[in-house]
Length: 79
Image (cartoon, rainbow, N blue to C red):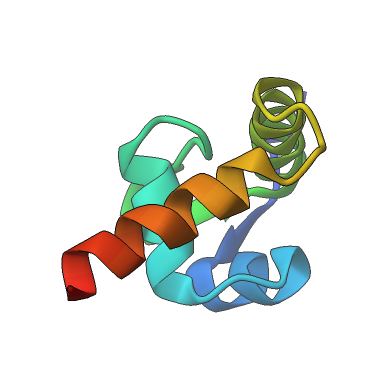
């Protein structure tokens, strides 16, 4: 069986519409698996990111409460 094709950080970041730094953070968190030498397998990277987005969506009830809570907290910190 052939080795899976890997892609550089810039390619994965562009594909997922993320910054390279965010891809690295998600990799550090174990969301996007990293292949050797700073490269990423396409399918596991996309699947990991989609799973992460699904989990975020499930945690939020969709009413915008998270946004309002963050905004309230930010306003308190600024004060």
